[in-house]
Image (tube, rainbow, N blue to C red; front, side):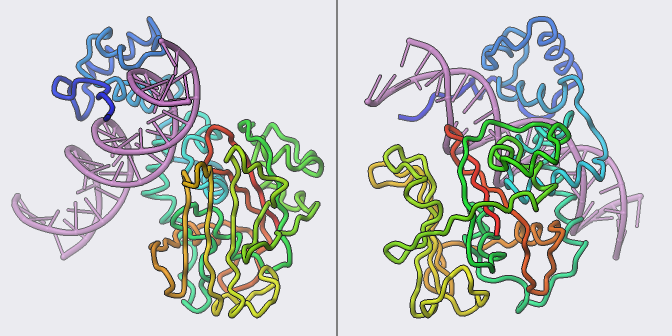
Length: 328
DNA sequence: AAACGTCACAACCGCTCCATT
DNA sequence: TAATGGAGCGGTTGTGACGTT
């Protein structure tokens, strides 16, 4: 059974808002508030608009303290850092930039910032550019640099409940030297400023049934399906029995990545599967995010050197926001 | 000056999440 | 426990402004 439409599409106005409509909406909300019900609001306010449209108009344009105009360098930096960290979670990124809306940031990223970053560096020679993605940048892209950049022999993985972010400035950097997992979960952007602070306990991925399992079974409650399992199917023909993580030779490896998340009843809610080197080709790879990560990484180069920056991963669950961060 | 292309931004669409019943 | 519906989110599209030929 399909969902009922949120409004009568035939009787709602679409397209740009007129000044009169803006005034009506603004005055109504300032007088009565939204009442927590956007669907009913347009009728009460005398607007022939969909409730969702009203909400968007208010949040992105009419709301007080909305900042329009040029983004500052500092804002650029924050956006880039967070994008490389959490991907296109525009609402979360917007939460770090007072006065900016997610839509604003999204547009700014797509139209300007991405190009600006790309322009900062020439495209490297193909042979040096990047290893096969791990996992595919096109899906849950954050994980990809885990593989790309990982040339040391271990990962550190912890999971913590994700409760939200604090303003960057509110976290004293010295605190990052302690209790890093808590801080990272509260404020992933903060530890970007101090990546060295995350050098602490090491958890080795366990190898089981030809899969590297990050996080391990002990940290993952399979019964509630709330965990992420990142599995690397090890191709022993290509790996030659060497430690996967310690190998810097990507080109000849054949691997398959599987993300299983929220599995319930044998069916994954979210998942990506990837094979490379012509084995599968299910996923069209997109390297844009990888390029961006390279560009904004303070230690990065395009010449194949080891990148020791830290990465933070947030799982796709919004019911149990978790932060998984890896450093190596 | 007109035609065409590109860019930036506002708005829409469709999906997921989650509270309520 | 399942169904329902509103809120919120991210991706995409539409359109006007601007630049180039």
